[in-house]
Length: 341
Image 1 (cartoon, rainbow, N blue to C red):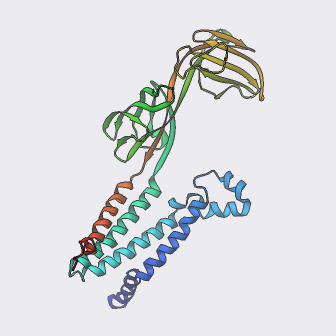
Image 2 (image 1 turned 180 degrees about the vertical axis):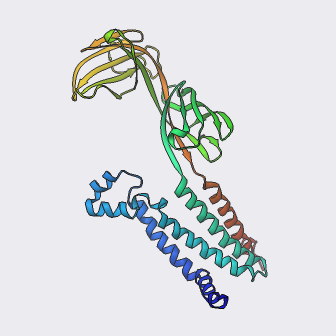
Image 3 (image 1 turned 120 degrees about the horizontal axis):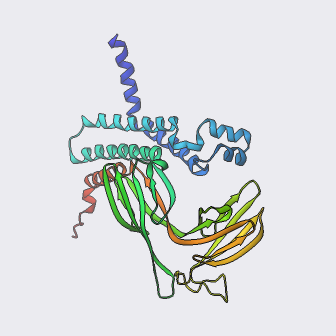
């Protein structure tokens, strides 16, 4: 029985170890990966049915082109390519006689490591944009990450003399993330790093604190600047809020500076897209808009944070280091200065 199976396994290893097999797999994976750049990834089924029609949209969903890099068949193609390169390395192990042949082996291993890291990233990388008010806490587990309590302790903006923003800075505290705590001030291009998790400064805005005093009770409302807050969806009632940090009674809507020197709030009551009433109030004041009595309680910054997790990035980095080292070992003579006669 063993004698009949051995030629089959030998032929399979020879096929996997063939450079032609590896090149063909690379071409196939490259062509398929192009589809992932042409077809938007991770959208709802309704998106594909609406943009590509029923038949093509159903085909995209059926063969998982909407989540191409996480599909089982794409992962199998990457696994076959890795096996092919491993088989090539196995063959070359018995023929290592010099630094050049060892470097060639290292080159093949580096490609395998990079591919495994890339496949790991494509299948497991996760990115979310969240907006956190000063003093607010969120659980990263609610956004698909490992558990950890993230809070925005303080947000600051540095301005140039002409009041153009110079830098945005968020003081963050990440508690009990994989057994560790992190306290760090982040800014644009300077994220908080916690293992393979990175938190970037993305945007900012004003969070406006209101209360609805109608009906003998005080109902708290938090509205983002320029956002529309639903008051009664069934009847189409919405509240539009525009924050004016440095109020000028002459220009009304134009703030003299971006600093909250004289904070006021413009409130507009909207029903079915039509403005019904409006008022401008200061902190601590209230206004009656239709059936609503609204009080401006205060304001604070909120910070827009981009949270990313990419477990395969370090493996890709190791692969590239090995790749560069192997190339140098293989062609190191090219870096030597030439002798001049």
